[in-house]
Image (cartoon, rainbow, N blue to C red; front, top):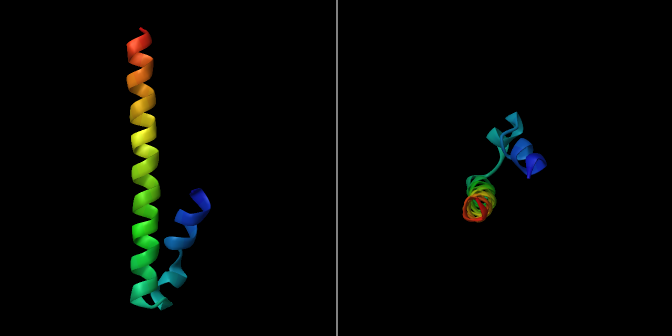
Length: 50
């Protein structure tokens, strides 16, 4: 995920076509959302054990 974010936010994105930017942005948003949901679920599981 770190590599994808670095590529998406690198300076050369200014030269990318808009649809490519949109796809990259949506992909990164989806990956970030999945990661956030997973960590949230993990926290809920930890709290239940306590």
